Length: 122
Image (cartoon, rainbow, N blue to C red; front, top):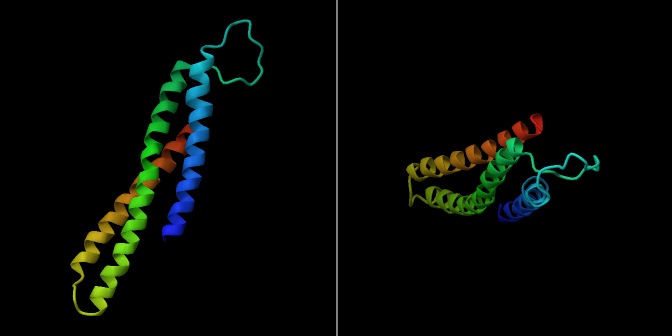
């Protein structure tokens, strides 16, 4: 689980940095498109979309932290199951763990939804 979380974290970091550079930093640095500027594919500042892109980037930054929590939760779950199988613990700790898993998956789903919304409304 830790290896998978690290791989996902690296992918999220790359995607998050690429999104930030293309949709937040570059438009801010370039400013609004001058009337005389050619249509060269440059990322110009569009206040209506830039604000939403900035929100998406900020929200996605929190998803990376959730991956670390998931890896820790998996290790904890393994220890809990060992305790249950050896009779040192009951199922109430599994319920708490499952809530942690649900929180993580809800956070990941919200990131995915935000990304899909952004792609649908360029």
